[in-house]
Image 1 (cartoon, protein in one colour):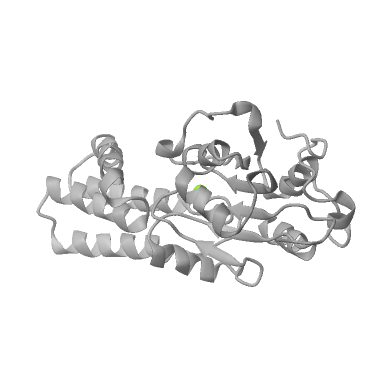
Image 2 (spheres, helix red, strand yellow):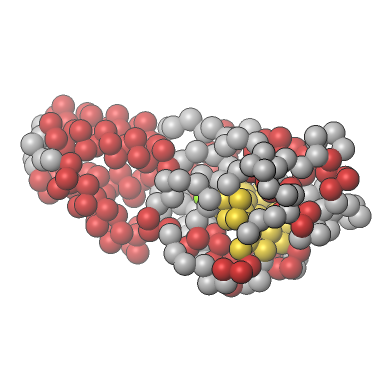
Length: 262
Ligand SMILES: [Mg+2]
């Protein structure tokens, strides 16, 4: 917890995938490669794609989120249609390797904003779900380990999980902010426990993660990470003068007034 007067926020909780770094694009690439592979085996994409999505939703309750379970889904879809030839199995191995080892590329402004917030004493953690090893590897490769004090990786994000996180950090909900791109896993659990919720709205969010907000009037929507300091200022959790020193002030590149988030 910061004791700097310019920083009243106790904890900034940051989702990882598609909030700090690119993720969905690599799943989309894996799926497109897989659809081409299946077409080569005689199965049109128009039939295979809905099958993938149905099986993916079914498997969520038993295997959870992440690249490894997703590849299990693709392999199941392939083997229910075919006894695949060896070249197709080798192609699947490549698709899997590309997905699991994709580069970790930070989204625009993430690094500069986190450096500015770190400088005024904001304590932030990465809160990302999925398989521990894969998610931890992405965090290690993100270049954020010097700025971020912790990377917490539950199998899935729930109200109880978030409540435990706040207790562990002795952070009050009113002085905690969660930033994420998923209404289901990020925004609604935050709203349910009274945490300030900032929705980074990005195209390509997985359909299974879309959900109506449980308290729409309490959601702060941003379309880029550069808008986050303005939200924290509007919430009176950081001072604009302190953040602005050496950080170029608040960015409102989309023509919004600073702090106008709805
Ligand atoms: Mg995410």
